[in-house]
Image (cartoon, rainbow, N blue to C red):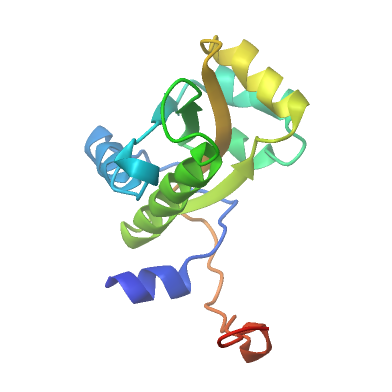
Length: 168
């Protein structure tokens, strides 16, 4: 799948089959995430792979929109190190890595959905406690991943009324 097709046809997938995801495929997703741009090329990200069914189930206790984790084969928590990166750009850096991961998952035939963690205190605290994250590590997003059990058609989301040239 070429890059434009992956970007334009990617959808949030919340229903998965029981097919396992190989460690090699997870590594490829992380390579894509770590290829994202970052301010000053600081690459402040860290990733936590979660494939323990008990841990995935615990997340649903504090994240109200995470029910799909009960069927996901894996989730990847995208974090940033508050002691690294360019001040003020950590969220953007982590978001770029998150988007790369989502597009790579789709391009590799997987379904995935972005679960927001930051800036909601109860979700941040929940992830920090559950995964025993160091104090300097801020969880930003959680990506639920599996082989898709649903097919969501491509949409044309281009809206020319949202485009402005040389000013508003």
